[in-house]
Figure 1 (cartoon, rainbow, N blue to C red):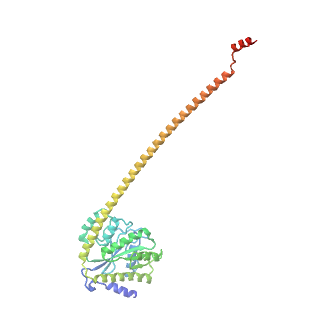
Figure 2 (cartoon, helix red, strand yellow; figure 1 turned 60 degrees about the vertical axis):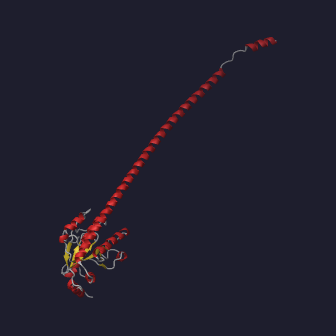
Figure 3 (tube, helix red, strand yellow; figure 1 turned 30 degrees about the vertical axis):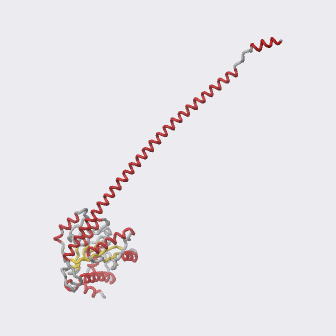
Length: 352
């Protein structure tokens, strides 16, 4: 299929032409989501550039650095029936940010307004307040955008897989994966990682940018193939009976349950963390008390040793003094002249 044929099919798409009619839908909402700075805004610029086939513009205000700057849910009309949405990217897969991700994907928050990472049940309050502003006539197609230059760590695989799987459960459509910056890393490894997660449709490309917007057939075809795949998937889904009003209620209930369960889990984590801290504090106190007792015992032993040493020195001193006194007495006895024996002298005279 050539470029012109792709464009003809995409531009002629209408829910009214589906087998069961529009069933209450009038627009495909391509919801882009993913980590910060992975090329969502640049991908929108690329799609607009390919579709309009004019001069390149920075429609989505894509940044030059991969830090992520989108803070609103911004829609970009591509055709009369297809709109791209640049959702706010996330940097941490904790329960608060993922709650916001699914609220955006479910189209439960208004377009064109600031997205904040809510804590607790404040996200639920925002969803309830936005209920009147949300259209039920949008058919949601989730698209996960990931830059090949950002390698996926082993510990991130389960988290990303969980987000993709939950997005499928919420929207009823398995997310398409778009890999950007395909020549700046290991494309083969990245594709294999997502296929192992269960992803069936993966599109890899280099985004057009202000610095690199030389038109190539390969980039144009990849973008048009992506849009054509979106339409084919939507047509497959709406061949079945659909009720957009009920589906919106289901998505809203899904996120309500998700927030409730996340909050309970968070409270449980906080309780476990507090218990762990208290346990560590108690162990530290016991250890400190043990150390203090050990120090005290060592001091007492040192004092006893010092006292014994003093007693030993005193004993040795007294013993030495006693020995010296005894030696002195013996010396005096030996050196003193003996007195004449009068009895022996008388006896000698008698013998004569």
